[in-house]
Image (cartoon, rainbow, N blue to C red; front, side, top):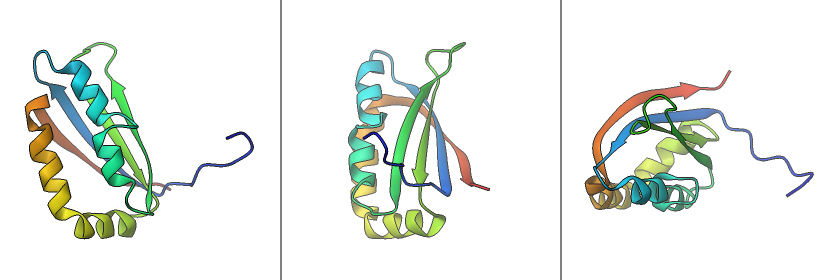
Length: 108
C-alpha cells in the first residue's frame, strides 16, 4: 500500500526455535508473517506484525519477532486469548524440537 505508513510498534517479543527434523517447511508456514500465530495475534488491535528470520550460519535456527503497539496491548491479547494461545502452542508443538524465549523489548 504505497503512501501508507505501517503502525509504529513499541513492544517486541523474540523467540528462538529449531524446527523438528523434516518439519522446516511446515514450521516456516506456521510461524511466518501470515501463518497460524500471526493469524491468532491479528485478532488483537494492538498487534502490528510478525517476522520470521533464519540464521545464515545455522539454517536450523530461527527467531521470530512479534511486534506490538505496546506492552499493554500484548498483555491484553494474552489475557483475552490465553485459551486459544495454549491450544495453538500444543498444535504447533510437533513442529519444534527446541524453543527458547529470548526476551521482550521496549522500542526507544
